[in-house]
Image (tube, rainbow, N blue to C red; front, side, top):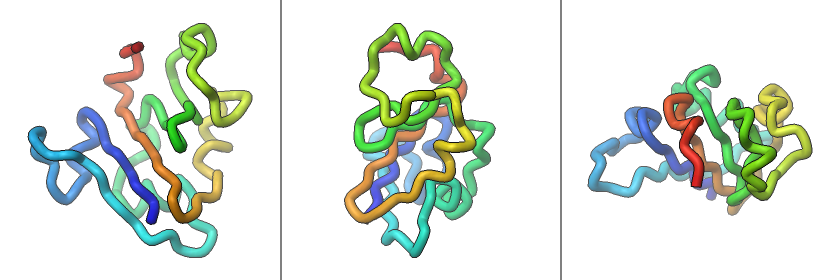
Length: 107
């Protein structure tokens, strides 16, 4: 199973977007499943994404502060969104998707 955790306004793409519920969508990965195909399956436009985390590591972001925040990174260039969307996913992968409106949030 691939788990997709949706945050902020992206929760509206989940079957149950209520704020008092965990917002996780699970998929059985298809052959050559990518982040882009998962977004298509959920109906999420890539332009709405602010941060993408893969298995707890930052994969892509639109926040220029990311390198200074020292997040563990899933790829060297976290600003290369096109490459991030083409990454193949497999069983037990977990995605965390945050909208652009949350891109300025830091922990």
